View 1 (spheres, rainbow, N blue to C red):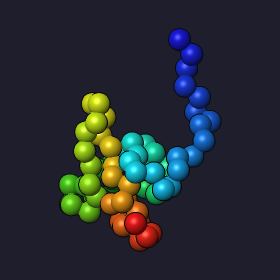
View 2 (tube, helix red, strand yellow; view 1 turned 180 degrees about the horizontal axis):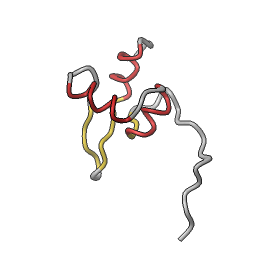
View 3 (cartoon, rainbow, N blue to C red; view 1 turned 120 degrees about the vertical axis):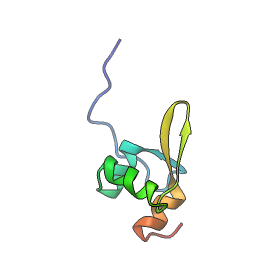
View 4 (cartoon, helix red, strand yellow; view 1 turned 45 degrees about the horizontal axis):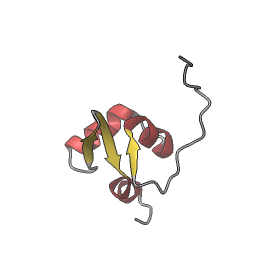
Length: 67
């Protein structure tokens, strides 16, 4: 089975949802900080297919971008 390349293109900043790793890449903050901000109700996380996902609108609002 082929390994996933670490040189993947950056995620689309206008995406509807992000994985924790994608949200960290787009925002420039660590996945653990994203989890802490979600615990503080600053970001909306949910589970989909066993993965924790970040709501794109809440991430853009948190970063001060237009939703």
